[in-house]
Length: 249
Image: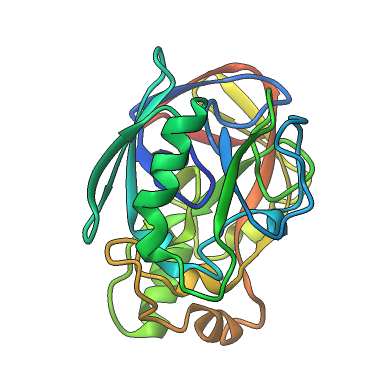
């Protein structure tokens, strides 16, 4: 197997960015992945108290599908993002700046349906990212499993729909479901595979348009589950690069 693609999502549910390489650290998420998250106006999480919180506290594509259409480019040195959306154009801002965060909320306002939760504040979970799991992890995806879903749907799908981190090529479809508890070496890093990732309505949104256009959960039902991808934790720090060999240990 090999590492075929590598993605991070600097703001949870609000933009994705393709990478060529990343330096993984033991016990941490992919650097800058879900580094920020957008609290909605009925959340009980306090943004002034940094730390992990459940996904229900945040703006998500499951309930606000238009957010799925955002692309991101992160300037790590300045902690500044350039976001792009087919309907909104480009927006540049620093999430740590309250005034710039407020301007960002105005920018995404057309994507947030009236009468539904609205963006309120930016939250962070230092050192681990605001992933869906309480354990700081990285998601592993299987390209063959993606193609199996495409065949069931009957047309091509962008892998970005799954919002995964590490994409592997060279395994059989759904083979990853048998890897729980096993370790995998990719480049200089070693990860342990913990569990399957259960999917939600966010997968129905097209990552290019932000419009719901495919019954992904229905397609997964055909396979007897609603899971896609695996959660893993980093055991050994190391750099990973596209085309690195991936070896099950």
